[in-house]
Length: 333
Image 1 (tube, one colour):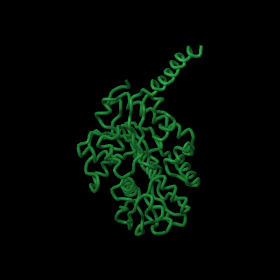
Image 2 (cartoon, rainbow, N blue to C red):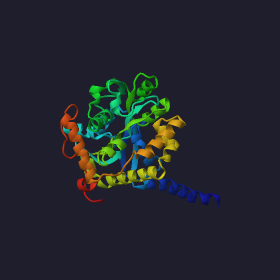
Image 3 (cartoon, one colour):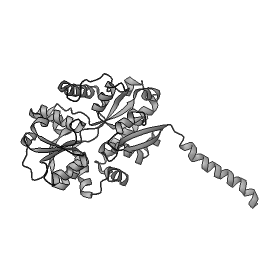
Image 4 (cartoon, rainbow, N blue to C red):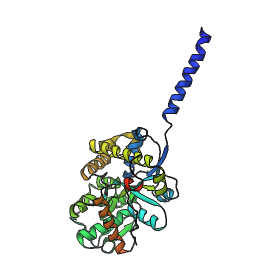
């Protein structure tokens, strides 16, 4: 009798082995985001909560250094970038790359941060002072520059004494008193606030939206290769659906989901105090969005045209920069 059990046991074992293989037979999608960037949080949730499996695809999730990540996407090493700004899309389309933004990701989770000891009340109070940033052509600096110019009527690059270092090093500069303020994005914003008992002097999304009839541009967008989107409409919709659920989880938790170890580890946050501030800032300022309405896209185009009118960084706003999946690839399959 023992020998007679072996074939059935073997068959059962083969069935057990076959079941998982069948369960993971899903189309693959490679997504990328900047390592340690808040812009990658929705992608972290998609990965950590298995939302890719829920929506019928097998995600490969790549978290890459800021330097070179856009080039990695342009040469085709990722299907979708979850962490690119519209300036990069404009530059790439001007150079002949067929890429397009098809959904929002991050509102402007950035701004001007001053230490708690600062008596500055508006950005105008920093004129003539030393201010840290990480590049005049970065999306962070360019967005802050245009917002301050519209709201306060001056050019930060001309009126501030700008000091350039990397995003992480800016926190140390502010803490050591080497600069009066910094331009930065999360989670470096929260690190700087904790290190200096600091505050936002300008919260780019909230303050500009209040000034500009409810509109502020996105700092990051979901960007895809035009041919890939058209060849894989079902997958494009699936990624968008997974993102929508990830943002819903952020909102429903009041951003407390950021405490999950898989998110905290990928963000590189080791301080409970910094994490508390990131969560509070995110919940207060609505760091992520799913609003891709025609009105928002038209306003974003107008914003980019203002940058192009300056001509120092952006020369032109190419057509086809922002699309909906419905218009670009057709109705949901």
